[in-house]
Length: 316
Image 1: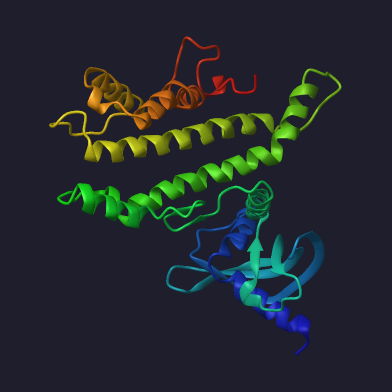
Image 2: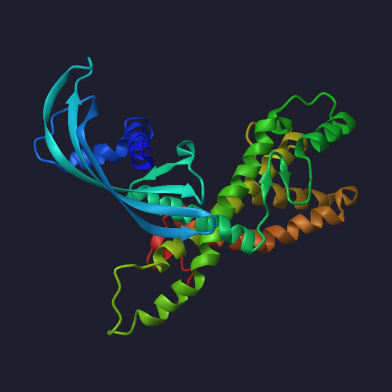
């Protein structure tokens, strides 16, 4: 068998396995007369044209044009339609340079490719701009949330049995940072493009089918909202050990928690300390800015113009 024959065999096998079946399903959905079917198989005709498409660092992406006969079968595995001959399907194949291992293939339709390229570019941006790289319960500085939490509990709160020292709680905080990092990478990558677009938009000679700045605008609010959520988790953590009241059932917002603790400390000098002062300044400064940036994406406010999500107003 030639290398081309081996390539076609592997490609045929991959396209009949999940998660690649959607590539063929999308192609079939464009054909007239497609009945309801449970699955498909390929006929004798299975011809490909492979063209170079894109190279990014060590990754090669090729465009594949596939001409194929398709036979459909029902939920019992019985074939009931063999009339779809010579169907044309276009998709993309991503693999590492100089690698012939088909187990490392990634087959992509156009939607997949756009997502995949965005992920690659975000990864490059994370490295280029030196964003923190997240590992299990460790964020940049090497702080071990679980170990330090256990030491804290054993020293001060031996009877505490809540969930804030569980592995999942620490992981969730890291996940929030990961979500924010992904959106920040997009902002760093596209900021110049978004600013140029805003400058050109008033020019009646300018026309484009690709508008970046609305997505850029929303991403700023998404980052603010995610970081805001981190502080809400921190308020929950504080409230578990130092509740505002003995019978409180739910943790308050970070803003309310710190504000009320500052009021409490104003009445008792023993509670006043530099750490509480730092949180007080946070609530009045950076946290207030986060609140302003996330607010229009969460709350409808008829005092703004426009009044909803489009009023993020961050591009000023």
